[in-house]
Image (cartoon, protein in one colour):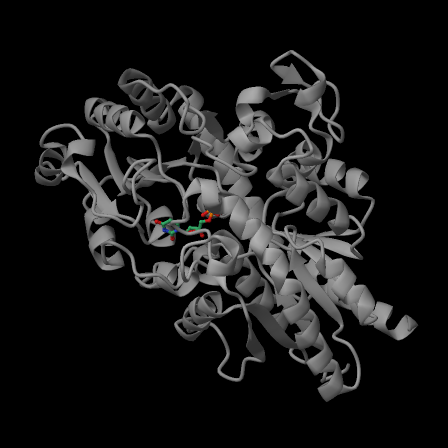
Length: 501
Ligand code: UDP
């Protein structure tokens, strides 16, 4: 079928979005080699994507994935120079980047028109991020369709969207409330809302952006979701009812190497996947993990753009030390300091790093760790995570239970789902304002690593989820997994849509 078919993709400017979009492009290519895929973004993000693709040995040499740079000037939007990504962006500037991202509309339209001039017809579809609802207009104006790709899970995406669209906390004094799209017995709490959402009233910068983009997305032709049918049955059912659009679950968009039980060297999986230099070489992390016993290490990371408060950091360190358990901790300067700046010893208890190094109990990795390598090592027994959806999928694909510490976006709803629906997680605290004491850290870590009781139960559940995730990507002719079927169905569907015209 149509060797010339072209798909244009537009990820939001954040690592947690760029990485799955690139993985989706590879996935579509593998299923249907006749497609050309152009990923459009700002220049610095394209540089990053190019390097991520070029270090990926699983990508075929004749890959038809192309990149298009869209003009973007951060300083025109009251952003620091050369700021094109949420990474290391101060929290109070996040909204500037959101608003600035709408300036990509005209450049995207020009790109699509160029493609039409060259190829004589519009691209098959535009696959755009949830934050780019305006891509629906671009698609319509050139006679094609927009597909919204949510890099989050179904439950989290629904909760996040419905909260912004309905602002239910505004019509009650109670801390707990129901949410349109969810049954009455599932209640949400004010503390699960990020400060900007809690303060939103429909007129502020945040709600103006979110309400506009999310409601526009509802006019898409369909939705792709980076999840797995079998692991989120409730979330998917509710999301489909709420959106009233087809939702194709095509996840997990992870490198195949981590989804197989192989003993081959994995020292470069993370770099290939995330395209970033870690603060400590993957080999060194793996050697350190080799010294530990199975399921005994807690891995701690808050994703690509978050950090915790100064006093929280101190309490976390105290709890870790008192627990006597081993850990790898990705450290960044605490909230309020320059995240790219030097890490100061005073943010941790006196002599902490040295004691941990000498006893081989704890490994501190600065800024960025080879996360996939760490999670797929047999010594890793728990993940203290901000519950970003990529981290969640990476952890569960390895059967590693989670300790939730959600920070922003839809993370609190991911954390809720992981506890209430999946039973693979306990929550330690929430956000940078959340209370946390060393003794609670110790209790929760012990609970999760426990070989009996709740720890054992969570590990068992996580192992079941891991199995579902791996079955979903099975690609044997007589027995295809649900995610493989969904990608095939999605491709068939948009090709048919083209023929209807
Ligand atoms: N990541 C990593 N090393 C780090 C921090 C993050 O490799 O030290 C990767 C992680 O594996 C995941 C992504 O960055 O693929 C973070 O995405 P997620 O959705 O978990 O969180 P976000 O960064 O969007 O908040």
